[in-house]
Image 1: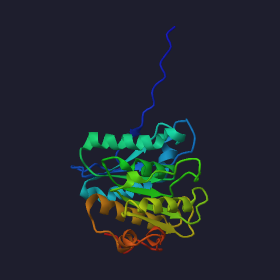
Image 2: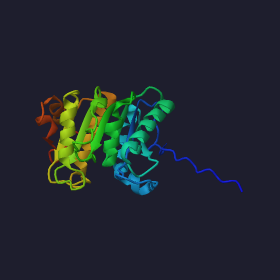
Image 3: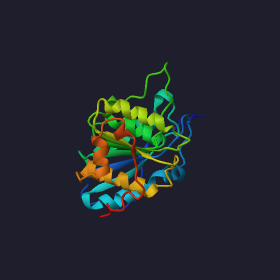
Image 4: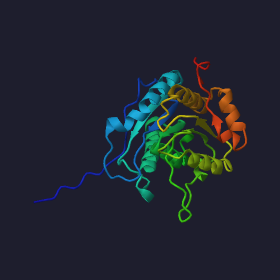
Length: 253
C-alpha cells in the first residue's frame, strides 16, 4: 500500500481587511504573536486576534491612499531557534506582496514574537518601515550572537513597549534600538508607562501612534510632532519617549 506524502505547510496571507482599493499603493503586513518553540499549526482566530483591531484601523485610515492590509498566517506557532520560522514567513509574505501588487512600499507590523519577526525580516527590499509592538526578544547571552540590526538600515522603525510588560522585557527592546540607532538614525522607541504586554490600558493612544507612523512612512503624510521629535532626538531620549495619555485625539482627521 502506497504511503501518502506528508503535506508541506505553507504560509499564507489572509484576506485583505476591508474592501481593496482600486489601485494599491502600499501594504501593511500584520504579524501576530507566537511562541518561542512549537511545531504546532497556529489557531487562525486566536493567532490573529491581537492584530486585527490595529489592522482595521489602518485600513480605514489608508483606504483613500490605496492601502491594503493583510494578516500573515504562519506555518508554525514557534520561532524555533535558528529556523526563525516566523521571520521566514514574514519574508515570504513580502515576496507575495511584490508578486500580487508590484513595486509598492511595505510596512511590517508585528506584536510580541511577531514584532521580532518584523524586525528580523525588515531587510527585505520591499520593506520601507517596521512597527514592533511589545516585541519578544531573546535574553542576551554572551555565548550567542546578539539579535541582528544591520538589516534595518534604510528603514524607518518604531518600537512601542509597555513599562510594566511582564512577558517581554522592555529593556531588551531598548538595547536593540540603541544598537540599531548607531547604524540607522530613523529609529525611535516609545514607552507606555504603567501598561502591560497587551498595551490594553492605552490601546487608543498606541493605535493612533501606529496609524500616524504607517501613514507617514508609506504615503508621506506629515508625522506628528512627538514622532518627529523622537526620530530627531539623540539616544537615549529618542528611545525612551513617553507616549502621552490622550495621544491621537487632536490628530483625528
